[in-house]
Length: 401
Image 1: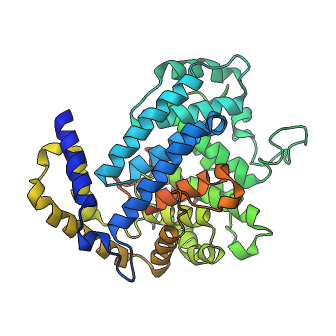
Image 2: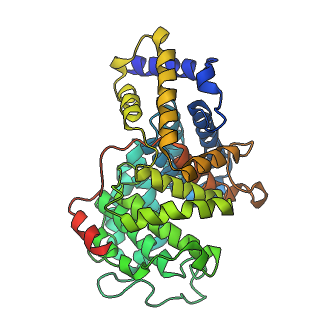
Image 3: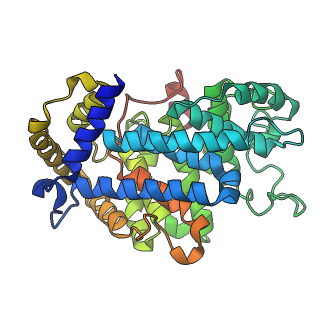
């Protein structure tokens, strides 16, 4: 089996590296799949190098690096990218496990939350950390649930006692109801998936979801007082879609979340005008989760190669298959909305020489987030089915949305 997987990797590397004009040359109106995948691989290498070189940043945000890798793994249909992501994930999982071999005695709820996200990502990329997970299961009930959620979902709405006092280190971070809500939503989702207690009270994802109406009606971008506050709403709405889609693994029917789908579709041109890569990447990723520009036939063929090495074709006939795949990708591109096409072209053309995205003047640590968002947007998206991700949520979604 290992030999067949290695053969798959070599064949794919050969095909993507050959001088296939249909594969490498960009059409005037759309990028070739070769250049899209090349951009993804360059972005992955940037993420990897930063994680290796900046120990201080990785110690603080290693769980985010792992979640980024998990996101690419769950979205891509390219076996070459999947294998490279697995290699990077293996290396970074070792580094993260050495840093967090046990739960510290003086740990706080925020740090436990970060450990929980790290464990969640590790399990999903194939490198579980059972000993630390068991320690979390013992440690988390010693904290009040509101220390993870910043409010009590059973008795109050988000932002009941905010803003936080200036003595609280989170004063400048957790200061809007959108931040409180989406932080609670993603924590509840991950804890429920891992079957970990989120503090000393029984809290489920649906207990946070029911507070979504406090964020409505959604504001238009131009109605916000400042860009920062508009980003809070963007992240809240994105977190809603990400969790309901199991972080991009499932497709969401636009009719199930019509208000959200219409909002993202209408606001992509506005974010394009702002030329802010992180926001553009997030919106494109969300619209792909809704099915915009996803070619189901191309996805099924790619996934069959990825999961069934026994079905590998003869290397001599694979280049024509790659060309045929390129034609399918071009077809999917033309099925996208004009704004989606423009966004993907903008993302590819905005990549920095070092493989990152974002303003290099802000420093390396500020490039991680836009780079991860761009990677998600560029992936073809391999959906394993339709959401919502938690059984029985459809009725709650109808009630709350």
